[in-house]
Image (cartoon, rainbow, N blue to C red; front, side):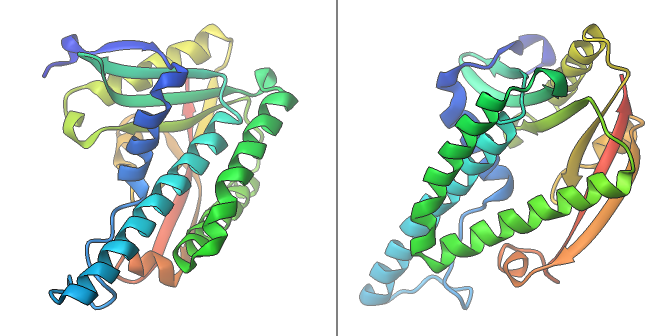
Length: 237
């Protein structure tokens, strides 16, 4: 696969399941074992494990969908990278002045509807609590950055199979062109240590704020000490 085979196009409603899956793969990994790190080998234990696994996977999809609607609630420009009809990456951008109240309300209602079933399981409640904690961190980062931005890259994610093929570069450059055409000269984005944040350092963005939090659920998610660092980066168009 080469960058020349990749087509960029405007996101469609029918892309949502593929984009939700990209978000799930990036931040909501499957749980392949029980609490002790082992897959049960007895019949009863295996049945319970499969049920727990199914509930977990369903919850992870719901959490990813909630994230997508949070991004879309403030997105005004949405572009996907496609090859042979398959979505390989997405970049969502926000021009703050173009975000409408109706848009925010519509996605907030959908988020709440998606969240309600998650309250029925410990797994789901933990995921919602993590999302709320991260949203609170985002507010801290914006405060610590000490300024207000008119443009934001709300989501930038590339499929693992397409990394290193120039897909991310094409998507990112495209969104910068959108910002420039709209008269923007700077923008910001959120990222964290689970992402390839070195990409932003390489591109010359400035880290304006950072915050580290620790949660037991992060340990269960694969982070050894349960800590995760979050950053706000500023870039020039």
